[in-house]
Image 1: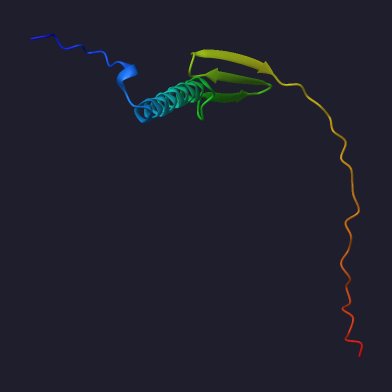
Image 2: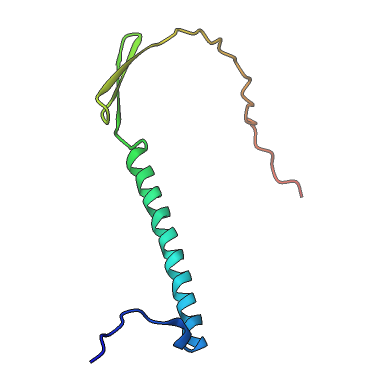
Length: 102
């Protein structure tokens, strides 16, 4: 009894089967790239800034920023700045309503 050969030889297959195998290989290659792209997006979302990650505390002229992801705190000194107010003339509405002119 001859041993079975697990390899499939391509020269004994019909051309239709070879074309079908090429299509399957292209599909699997595309699927692999999609998987890597999806993993890259998930990694970006996991490592990027997240809502609620930064906590701010205002104490007088200082602002303390606490990064909850890395347990770091930063102190930021606020600068006072005087901004002159500009008074713009507000267009007034007509006080008298004109009647119908017919």
